[in-house]
Amino acid sequence: MTRTRIVIAGAAGRDFHNFNVAYRNRADVEVVAFTATQIPNIDGRLYPPELAGPLYPAGIPIATEDQLDALIQTHEVDVVVFAYSDVTHEHVMHVASRALAEGASFELLSPRETMLVGTKPCVAVCAVRTGAGKSQTTRRVAELLHESGKRVAVIRHPMPYGDLARQAVQRFERYEDLDEADATIEEREEYEPHLAAGNLVFAGVDYAAILAEAERDADVIVWDGGNNDTPFVRPDLHVVVVDPHRPGHELRYHPGETNLRMADVCVVNKVDSAPQEGIDTVLRSIRDYTDASVILAASPIYVEGDAELIRGKRVLAVEDGPTLTHGEMAYGAAVLAAKQHGAAELVDPRPFAVGSIAETFRRHPHVGALLPAMGYGRRQVDELRETIARSGAELVVIGTPIDLRRLLDLEQPALRVSYRLEEVGEPTLADVLRERGLLDAPALIAP
Image (cartoon, rainbow, N blue to C red):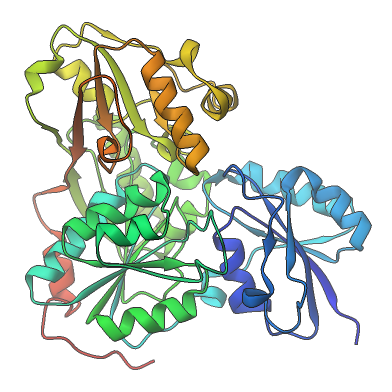
């Protein structure tokens, strides 16, 4: 039998999931390679044979995306499958054009082909862009379910940056579990707030196995999406967060527009800080392209500790890395808090950046006088710590979802700031959950 030769273009997440559910056990298909982008240090590895299955006894190599053209030529690739998120529609078509020019077809797998069907109710929280406010929305949904007496398991979009075989199924219940898993800053930013709220967190690589384990521990599954990707689990309620600070992006980025069109509920976040023109634009997009209900929400900033310590200080603002990089935001909670509370100056860390942190600034020139908290491995964490120490700031203001003070031995005093979702008017998230029967007694959903 002639096997269709495929390259999956990804970023260590959606690509592995698509392989697992669509290709792993197909004798008529040969996935010759994955390509990697967006995330550092994920190329040059192997998708291990333990996960790839018996058709791939040697595993599957992971190359860089700039090798795509050569891979197509060398392996006579028939199809390139695009499988990563938060890129413009134009970017997707540039990758497609490279594939087509080399003689390969180009495909996108539909959410229907790749969503797992569970036996427990599932609420999916996704977004149209990274940094829209998905995390605080997910926490609010989990809080409401928890308060109604449900056992909640949060399944997080993959971030497998380490030993893939070891990370196939990950279960986090305590902070110590994060230490044992050698979790990166990026992982901790997503997991720790849920652990603090008493929710179980599951993640990893093999999401069929992850879903099965999570359902043993929970009455309701909450899918916590990454970037602007679509859910890996078929939701009974699909919540999509829209950002009026980036109006129009809901129609320009892949697969955020897909999420928008699939949404049952759209949360228009940050209405307390966005211009009315931006709010009107995203509301028009929701009205024109969906039948979704609309929830308006604010994201007020909270300073943990004495906010007066900021006044008059030379402040280094440390922000969530992915929100600034491929999310393309120019600032976050730390910058806003520093300005609101009278910082004398925002310290520009770029002259003091070292190693991969300096490279991050070179690759993302829109990032200005603030520091993206990149932390995809121990070396990068060390470089982040060194950049902060070299900055000469009098105070560090941390706007990341986790408290970096627990991971970094900072020389300067530091304050942490955070967002919390607050619905404005009606309907609320509680209203839509109740309407779907998700705040009632625990119940099984037939597959």
